[in-house]
Image 1 (cartoon, rainbow, N blue to C red):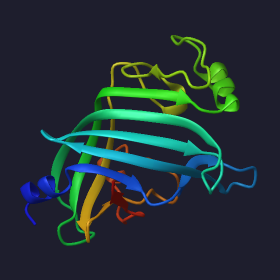
Image 2: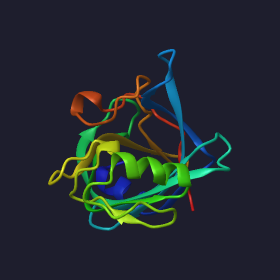
Image 3: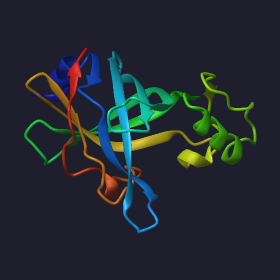
Length: 188
């Protein structure tokens, strides 16, 4: 498929099949990586735009949501990725919106300790924009748009992105771009 055909085929709404497991950058006392659970809802829009809602979860069954993260921005298509025929290198740039909503009191309390400066008091169910601001919990720096160097692969009406690096590194540079596929999203 050409890039134009891929862009046309991926338009629409995609969701997680079930709660997903990722390695986080945080470690347990024994040095092992802490698990990170989430669900994704991804909307692809015309003109290389996207919306992504991620719900971070406390448990592998998704019974206890911790936070909702909403990102809106643009995709930059960077060429073929060698993981599979038709896979593409795609950068996701949050250049329109980045919001966080605590969904559990413990998470709101944590944000009030580590991300209080320049924000209203963090409260459960109350969304705050972190767009264009410093936000230490996510490593965001004021004035710099969040960007991930990822990959996209469409097959059998499933949308695959890159699998997280097993050491918890983010996709923050070309060198950290994923080299494997993760669990796919299905059409919603």
